[in-house]
Image (tube, rainbow, N blue to C red; front, side, top):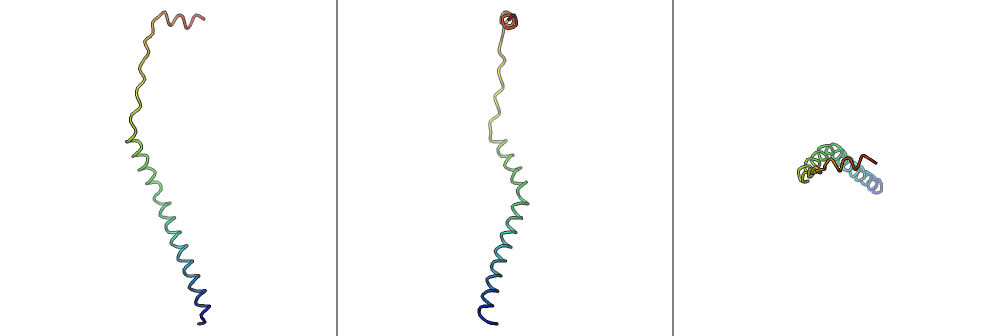
Length: 70
């Protein structure tokens, strides 16, 4: 086989191998993305402190009547 045919064949084979490896890594990432998303949500939920509960405001009947008599 002539040298230039071998060089073209080897170049095409290397390009196909590169794109096949890229495609397999892409499929692996696509397959693992739901697992990564759920792990990320789990970690963020457990590292954030719980929200403080709002304290009730004590009002009197006079405050209520002042607000609602306008």
